[in-house]
Amino acid sequence: MAEKKDQIEVLSLPAYAQNAQENAEFSVSSLCNLGCNFFEHQNAPHRHNFYTIYWIKKGQLTHTIDTVTHVVKKNTLFFLAPGQVHQMKFSEKVDGYMIAFHDSLMCPSDKSDMAAVRNGLFVNDRFSSVIQISNEEDEKELDWMVKRMIQEVDERRPNYAVAFQNLLQYFLIVASRSAASPVEVVPEYQSKHNSALFMNFKTLIEERYRQLKNVSDYAALLHIKPVLLNEISKQLSGITAGEHIRNRVILEAQRYLYNTDLTAKEIAYKLGFEDPHYFSRFFKKYTNQSPSEFKELARV
Image 1 (tube, rainbow, N blue to C red):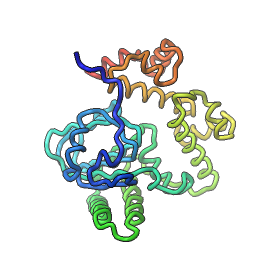
Image 2: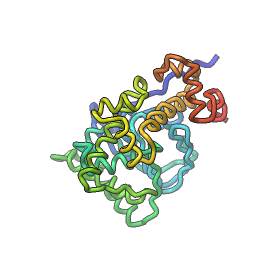
Image 3: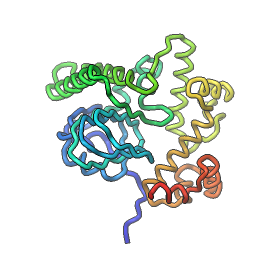
Image 4: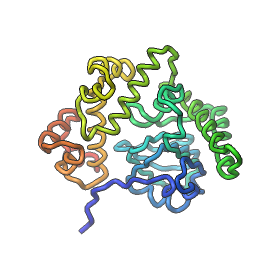
């Protein structure tokens, strides 16, 4: 009898990339230089506790992010946030790069302009971005930047971490220009203030969605009224704060249903529901499928 799969493995940076130093904040490498650990983990669903960018330059593979499978084309960029569940299945040798980094490397403050670029790529409604690089000049520029990152990490000259950080930020800016919905930074103070509040709200959801499921709970933590939180959310994302909370809970439920053998009851308790029947009704109300129906259809 096969062992029951009840967990989704979480990988840290040193365990994932052989060239990453212990306690490393970042890593960059061509895919073929990542070593056995990298390819051994790709067939099984897993999470990272760091941000990841994959640039597939050539070759064939399928990449499943949460429950969506992408057939990868040449010059595709994938941006994965910490906590996402993904797996890659290679049908032939691929060429490309992986860039990995912790949040501390990205930007000093959620109020910075770079935070808007980062969040546009990593923390969006789909929880990830898939970008096709079709502009030859952008491709050359991005390729130069990645090679320069690799050189900085390999040589470890004075202030190489600062150089890497600046190259990474420029890489994200150039990549964001190729996104289907370009990431724009709005300079007005009120827009920046609202954007910072909204990003704090999204961060709180990530930290508390198992315990807190009401808009009023998050509004209290942010020291604003629930109606204002809903207005800001609607303005910046097109959906209400309540929808963001529900979507995050449902996404995690779908991850467990798709990638583990846990029952709906076990998943309900993992997600902070005291009544498993209420969880099943909640899931069906917002997906039009019961948990068992979703599991059955997702694995076809």
